[in-house]
Length: 345
Image 1 (cartoon, rainbow, N blue to C red):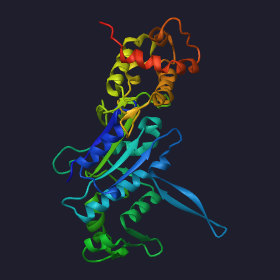
Image 2 (image 1 turned 45 degrees about the vertical axis):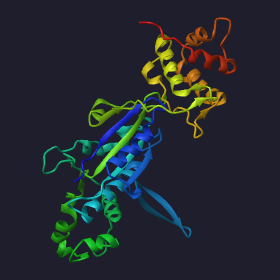
Image 3 (image 1 turned 90 degrees about the horizontal axis):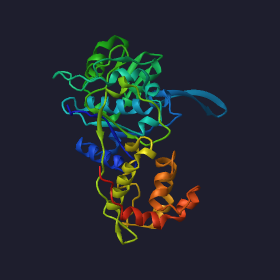
Image 4 (image 1 turned 120 degrees about the vertical axis):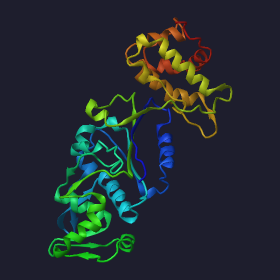
């Protein structure tokens, strides 16, 4: 089976984490958009959003309750279905989680947390080491997403998805007396037992993490160690500032300026910016682009605690009390950074 990834890409803003994910999906052979799902964590994101939740649905003034699958359950079903369609070489799938540290990841993953440990031995390589049991609603929704319908009144399971129907030989409907055959053909290949699931080896989970985000949740060490981590530095952007100065060189000097003034900056490494913090299709970044996007980030996030470093750069005569005053110094600031000479250490 295809080797899987379980990785968190981290780095400052504008380093190209989303661009890196596109490359990773290509490397995994995921060229079909139906084989990956993207979600974004945020402070209000819950386990229900991730796995599934029961919600009321009004039809002709009648309220019914329907179970809606979460993003994890959707991707898991795709992975299982691909195994049933091609047990030898199933198509890979991926769950992409953007801004994983903006949500309470431990609460969001819940019991799924224990599935993140993967096997390394040859027979079950890539499968979860441990299993977790689904609720009945989660279990039957998972089967439905795979293409298996359960008739509760007759206690039968039937293959409803056309592609899956062609792939599974023999019976398409399994009655109560045929449960052994149902297990052999459907559940055993995807290692489902007693409604307990494992993440299969053709399912990758890739996440991004912006280390400079101020609205982040703490990630405990037990959760962190179940992931591979990759620090993204980012590729240089071929662009100029107003057609005069090299943008990437400007970013390099700006980051050196941050490092030299680390005593005024909290968590200096988190405040480094990437070459794609501002992007331009025309390869020309304007002074206004820098004034409207970069300067506010510097004022509000980098030098949020102490503006002394900015005051020293721009000049002692210039008082910096408000952002408006800093914004008025945009051209001066750009020039100072372009000509900046790092301090010797």
